[in-house]
Length: 352
Image 1 (cartoon, helix red, strand yellow):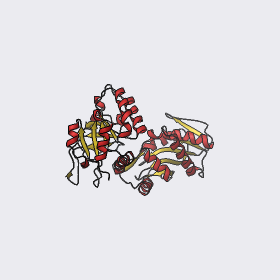
Image 2 (cartoon, one colour):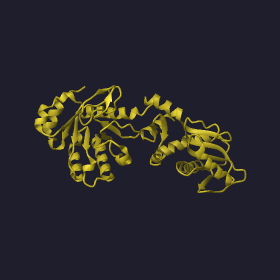
Image 3 (tube, one colour):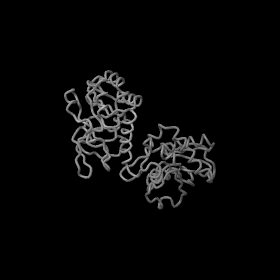
Image 4 (spheres, rainbow, N blue to C red):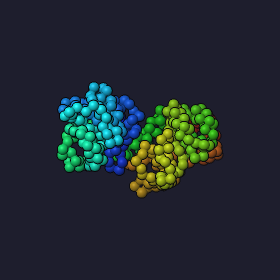
């Protein structure tokens, strides 16, 4: 079970929202091996119960119920709008499989509809149970849960050393530090090209040298999700992160889902959200201490857990005047990416 929880967390299916644990079931649908592992644990939960049929509320629970039925030869009922389809035996005993249970109001509506179809619910299995009080709702049912909020927090804190969203931030910083050591480089490439084909050709040539690629997707001609996915594939192939320098200050004006292909978005202010992307800002502070005012001030402002990055260097004269040892990473314009300059910068950077 521990490995399942950790896998769900690493795939961003389990995530933190404020102080609560949430599950992204739509994302889970895209990971068949995680669904199959979940089904194994679910069957262990129900195999000794007294039941004749299973039924899942439409959605992820219906999908899992179908897999359970197929794998273990369990008679399946299907809920379609207000009607139940399948062979219903006299005195059948049904396990209802649901996604999340908190105070039970959402599920009670389905139970009333099932009972109107003369379906007798004996047990309820929830994929996830929050810490909300469910006692009034489950008085008449035996509730079994695959995952509980307390158990998830316990497993994550013991195995990943996390009990807050801060882990996502420190994880990104750890990756950057890892790349710095393994690639023996501290270079960020700022690519100002506007044609995606030119960008991909350029990045493919310099990808092995860089820790991060900095672009502004708003300035790339006809930029779309497919372009972002193409850059993401290059980042995996050459092992670097992608920074989209769009400088957001109000998330209400953008669809955050459109930026899943990148690792970092820049911001004008410290934006605290629950999402897989890490936000970097030039105006945040740690314990009221303002760090550098360059394009990135802080990556994850906790316990001085930040990366100090230089302003973009566009000319060789700027390169001569900058004190390279003051920065963890140096941002270099793509037109300056030449072997001599790369070697010069990396030779002068301190290795911690």
